Image (cartoon, rainbow, N blue to C red; front, side, top):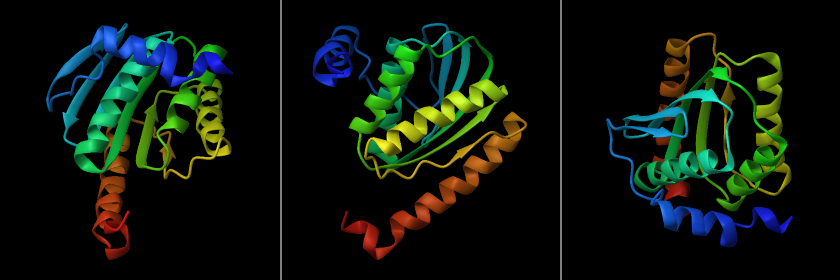
Length: 171
């Protein structure tokens, strides 16, 4: 559906609001009601509060794109304990935006997700794969924030190893 084309709403929104500004290491921003922190060079930490909107998706994806441009991959640790919902329109929008990015490496750990939330997030990422993206995006639902950090640390090591392989330098 054309409503999700990046060239229309998303481009105007990012240009008008400055969401494509780099996220500095150690900085925290509010994205809607959600707290977004770039804790270290390769990791974005998100504390989701309430409903997620298309605008929220754009800001978070812009921050992750900056991390990937600097590190070659991105890690996301999200606490969704206080999340209300992801409206169907936002699910479609998020999948279309992630698919637009093409192939990249990213890992996501989501803490505090209910069974329904786990299903919705898994469906969004599967939709991206079905839309033709070959990105490597491991997903975990750890039992705690600390377990999520440990899992993402292992993913970071694996991504760095893959990037140092001779075949990955020609990409």
